[in-house]
Image (cartoon, rainbow, N blue to C red; front, side, top):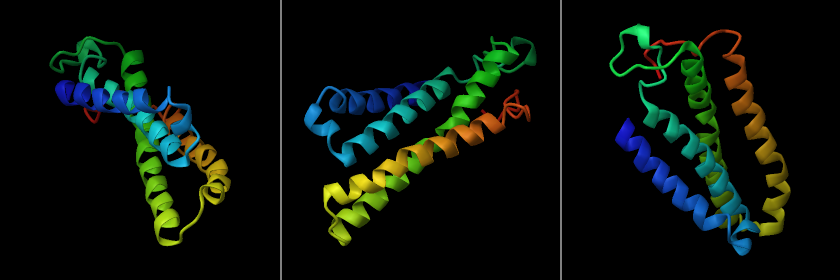
Length: 142
């Protein structure tokens, strides 16, 4: 996961770099969705690139050198990656409305007002719910 994580970070980083400084792109719903998806993918890819390093050193896992806290940190942010496929779903809905139903940008923008908060509530809600349940300790899942 170290190599593929870094490659994914590079791709997501380039998308973010292409969109954020460009005022024209930032005004378009499509690019805002792409940028948000890329931000979450960048963070997730970084967590995957860390691989087994955040796992507690005493676990016996190869290259583990972290603590329980670093393990929980990594697990939380990997769980938060749920936002990326939700943004991918949003892009599919965007294409459906824009291409099939020929919605205009201003109509889609009205829907977008609900899109970002809904994704944040779902992704952060599920990730936060795992904390008191202690789901992010080393389980060799992350």
